[in-house]
Length: 143
Image (cartoon, rainbow, N blue to C red; front, side):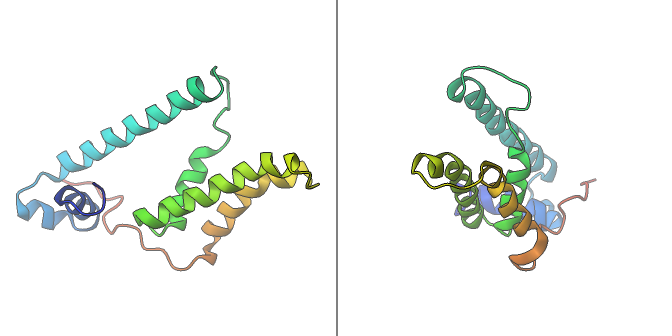
């Protein structure tokens, strides 16, 4: 749905060229607010899974910087869906390695294993990936 439909073109255009969306007859505000509501719904499902499905309770600080990793994945993915999914898989694999390497008998310092996904995110945000181009009207309000 987010790759090859008319809705995906309208959503991307509302971030890149909102004037073009307005001239086509679609509501820029409606598209943006709808995207924010859908994003919030998906985030609430993720939070509910994390607290109830994964660790069976809610605790303070249970996300441990997952939002930072999500923003880094979008930047690492160069604001494109496929690349962002790949970045999420890389960060997830790095997070999973902190549990798998000790189980496999590989002796690595635990602080290094815990730091690995955040170190990868820092490298991605620091600019080793290449020049990033966010949507042109990302922070501009629509009148």
